[in-house]
Length: 571
Ligand SMILES: [Zn+2]
Image 1 (cartoon, rainbow, N blue to C red):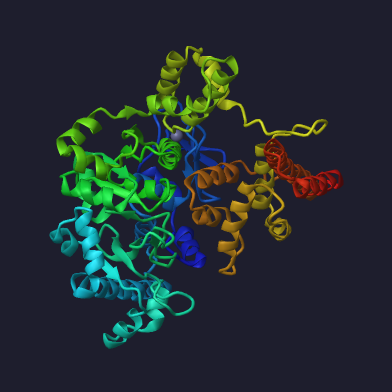
Image 2 (tube, rainbow, N blue to C red):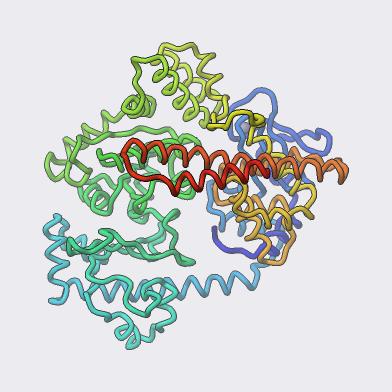
């Protein structure tokens, strides 16, 4: 998330009236301390969308979407976080503050260094020094015109960047901040073909580098995280693709640089690629500004299939309509088009699978549908996957289709979707659901901020979700602010986490006595600790089983297991 100090976000929120802003989009009626209306994010006849002015949050009990003023503006106006902050600031009459000038300067400095480096590496590529890189690109079928228009580059084996930069007035510090020099002061990219990675406006945020020698690891190397570049946010090809995505109202998501280039060259301009990851919430938020339709074309290997399934889950939860084109084994979009041509590819994408068929075909590779147990596990996993779909009518359609395809009643599928994950639990332990303890724990923190200190001391001992919350809280606190619900929500990069926090903030019971709070807090800590320990025990048990099957020693795991079990007893 762009870095705005918490104090500034607070000032904007403090001077904004969340009820009147949301009231422009939703007819709100007073209901106790909140306001209620029909949710703008899903179809409904009875209002389940609440706005709470004291806490500056909204939450829909129907579809689970929630957040603060900024996330609301992002969603309804389809704008970025920075744009939402600017919009809210101008409405509230808050002047563009000093700080953002400093943040912008740092970013500008990085973009400047990147611009220089892109030009330098490009000139190297088209000079005799870049012959190996140029030959490689030619070999991969990239025409010179594309090499020039996209400013593809070559980073030589030696350290050359700093000296060249000095001559053009670009400092070593800026190269370092841009991630172009590593900690030892050497060139970060060496003997690689470089792809500048741009935002939709064309600013170069960072680079992706393809190794030229087989011995070089890793094969693909990206710019490290900088204030301008984050792997979980950027999409290769977006600058070229965003207009086509909007026009055609769908985006083709592929895995690699060469896939994007090949598709753009073949006239499929609406293709982008994340950098070696599945789609994240941040990617999806960016794409949502242009379309609600995803076509996923991941490689037909196991890594590709796993990335596709993760992207399917994230995309469904973000409300996208998804199709998946499983390519024939051994092909990626680049090699497919080079082998069969663009017409065959057009036919192929027209025949891409509906997400439901794809999910079933993928999961039947893991679960044996012929056995009752396999079918049950498959149904449960699919039910959970589609239970994330925010629109309830759409979700219902998926459940109907699942029911038909699996020949299981829709009621059973709906019930399976609601069942919590069944963690492996040592016998004799009380069964309190962890999600409930997580809710209560965070509720206590929100309604009684004095507990944050104690929560921070428990870092590493509780559940992954609580760790995420503590990490967000840490971000709010670094500005010397107390942790407020809306600030915490603003710091949550993961949309699912923001929704969850909004619900907790809205439900938080502030009327509890301090004794009750203390009791609840201790109780939650105990349950969450146990939960974490039993997850670790389950994982160890799994490792031990595998090692035993393989006949390898597992004393170390046994020892760890004993320590864990002893810890649990101490509980
Ligand atoms: Zn809703």
